[in-house]
Amino acid sequence: MSVRVGIESPLTDDMRALVGELNAVLLELTPPEFCFHMSVEEMAGSQTTVFVARDPASGEALGCGALLRHPDGVGEVKRMYTRPQARARGIGRAILERIEALAEAEGVAELVLETGDRHPAAWRVYERGGFVRCGPVLDYPDSSYSVFYRKALTRRT
Image (cartoon, rainbow, N blue to C red; front, side):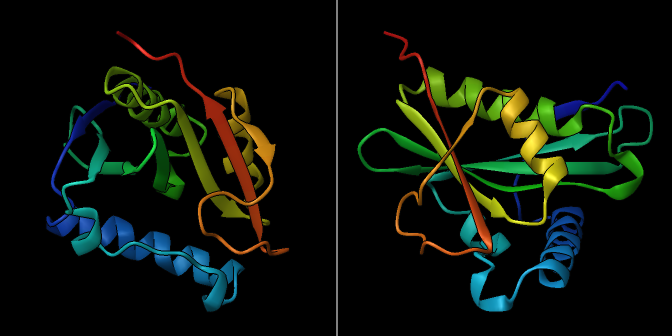
């Protein structure tokens, strides 16, 4: 499937809709106290870059993901989501590749992420992208509801 992945503001109507869908899915699978959502307003902060995958013909937003920068060369993959009708077409992989490319270009040493314990499709995207499971990252609690991943990046000079 051909998609166009680009950097966009999270404060658009279609991003609000995507994030709303993502939040609803997560709340169906995980207790609210173990859902670590970023609002679109938080995603609009200067430390975050948001990527949106769009159908090139219709312009419809099909998926999203974000890079959140932390101190000490750590980047966090956040808000990864692909709409159900667009799944299994490589959209998650395409967004993850763009996040990783930006992180490497900026000299980020490592990408980390937290995902749910009931998201095997997400695990496949991350593992195929070279991420490895690890213990808790950043300040996330150690919980049976969370699965953590990390990936060392090659710094560009």
